[in-house]
Length: 474
Length: 106
Image (cartoon, rainbow over all chains, first blue to last red):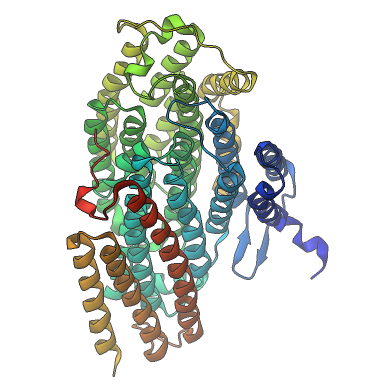
C-alpha cells in the first residue's frame, strides 16, 4: 500500500495523536490553558477535515471508512467540541459553585479517547473492532463521572456507572459469544450471510437477546435506564453533557451498525421488542421528568424519553431510519447543549437546579428566551429543530405502518410539553430572589448565539437535513 | 468434555455472577461477580472455537480465541478503573456498602 491510500484514515490517526498529546500536556503546562487550546483547535480541525476532506471510501481489513461513518464521526467530533467549550468555566477558580475541576489535560484526553472508541465503533466491520470500540467509548466515562474532586456524589455516580457499565459489557460479551457460536464468524459480511441462512437458530436468538440487553443499558432505554438519573446527577455537568449527547449517539450508532446491516434480516422479528422498549422509555422518561428538581436529573429522564422516540426509527427501513436517527441526534445535541450552557451560566453562583433558574428573565432576558426556545425544541414544537427531528423519526416508523406507535409517541410528546413548561415557569413566573444581573464571557456569548441560531435554522431550513440524509443513508 | 458441558458450565457461571452482582452488598464482591460473568463469556468463546458452533460448514476457529484474548485485556483495564473508583468512594464514605450509596435521589 502506498501512503496516499491511508488518506481516508487520516481523521482517526490524527485523533489518536491528539488524544495522546493532550493526555501528556499537563506535564509541561501547569495552568491547563495549553490543554484546552490544543483540544479545541484539534477538534475544530478534525471537524473541517471530516466535513470537507477526503470523500473516498476505504477498507482496511475490518476497519471500514464509509460516507455514513464519516457523518457519525462528524457528529461525535462536534459534540465533543461543544463539551470542551462547556467545561471551560468548570476548570476556572470560582467558575462553578460546586467546586473547581483540576488537570484539564487528563479530562480532555479521556474525552478524546472516548471519541476514538466511537470512531472505531462506527467503522467496525467485525465484532472484535465493534466490541473494542464500544468499550473504549464507555470506559473513560467511568473515570470522568467520578471526576469532581472530593465530592461524594461524583464518586457515587462513578461507582454506580462502573457497576452498571460492567454488567452491560458482560451482557454484550456473552451475547457476542453466542453470535459467534451460531455463525462461526465475527466478520460482518459472514455474519450477515449466516443470519440470512439460518434466521431461527436458538443460539443466534440467545446472542441477540443478550446483546440487545447490553446495548439497552448503554442507551439507557427503559426498563434498563435506572442508572442514568443517578449518574447524570452525580457527574460534573460537562460529563453529563457528553453522556447525554455523544455517548448516547454512540450507543444509537452501535444499535444501528448491528441491527440495520449484519442483523437486518432478523429485525422484522424484533419489531415488538423495539416497540415495547420505545413505549416504555417514553412513558418512564416522561413520568420521571415531571417531578425532578435537579436539572441534571431532569435531563436524564428527558433523555430517556428521547431514546424512546429514537427507537421508533429502528422499526423503519434501513436508509431512512439511519438518516432520521442522525438528524434527530443533531437536533437533540444542539438543543441539549444550549440547555447545558445555560446550566453552566447559572451554576456559577448557585446550584444547577430548577430553583436556580428563578428570576432568569430579569437577570438576563436573552438567556431566558434561549431557555424557552430549548424547551420548545425538546418538546417538538414547530418551527424549532426538535420538531423536524421528531417528525423524521415518526415518519420513518409510519412509513412501515406502525401508526398506533406513532400515535402513542405523539401523545407522549404532548405530555412532555407540560414538564418542559415547568422549567419555563421557573424562569419567568416564579418569584425571583435577590440576584444580580448575569454577565457572560465572550466564549459563552458566541456559543449561545451559535446554538440559538442553529435551533432556528435546523427547524425551518431542510437543506442540512437533506445533506445528512443523503450522506448517512448511503 | 463436549460443547454442551462447556455451555452448561458457562451458563452456571453467568447465573452465579448475575446473582452475586444483585445480592452482594460489598462493592468489591460485586466486581468479583462481574468478573465471573465475563469469564462465562470467555468460556463460551473458547468452547465454540474448539468444538465448532451450531452453524453449518467450517467456522473461523481463530477468531474466537482471538476475541477471548482481547476481552481478557479489556476486562483487566475495566477492573483497574473500577478499583480506582472503589478507592475514591472509600475515601469519601469510609465504607463500600452498595445499599448505603444513596446520596443521589430525585
